[in-house]
Image 1 (tube, rainbow, N blue to C red):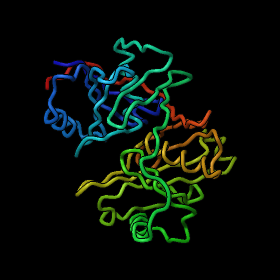
Image 2: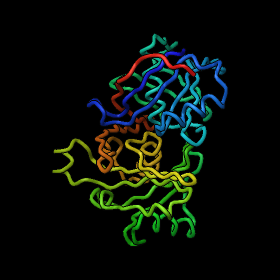
Image 3: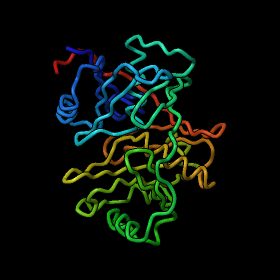
Image 4: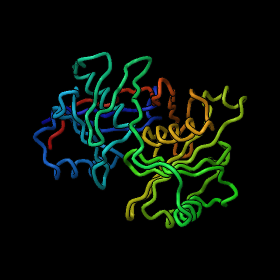
Length: 279
């Protein structure tokens, strides 16, 4: 039996963030056991905390979806750091250093848990054929797209700027057209609405793998990639709050800040279930 937590990430209000399953002391598990449990939880990600193999790290995390392992993901980073700290983990420095397949990721603790966005593995222009696939999958006209770019920091995201937040909320994806696409879309709220809802932009993230399709409740990696792209292009300010999950019954908030050449992605993180799991 291994210690287990289920964590609500990117929301301080119960059940409105993105759920993450975290298994502690997982060094003795095989890949097959991790994959099997991740499929069983049926969550977007399940993580397994292990001893670090890099001397600069405080812990190592393995991040699994229902269909395979990821080199990096955002809400699993915050949820895993939260679970590690809550279980008595002690960082050697002011920040927590997480080791994952993508490398070392810094996680700061205040004012809320936040990670330094890792470098994009792929950025820049999306070729014409893929651009057509993305607009078709989103059910939008090419003229509705203000900009599109690769924002891939591990999962494989393509970012789409639709200009307005209301345009983002109006998207009805063509599930059959998604195939293997992972697409994050963003739009801006007017100042009055932004003040009333406590968010400057609206984000949605769609992912597909084989027959599986979903809309993620709140996505750290997608928000990180969008921020690196659009802050860098001058299309978003250095500091803003994103809302995500509105269409799928959630109400997440992601705090984004560009500082000293790095983009930080932060959110509230709360344990909702604690116990032990037999793997």
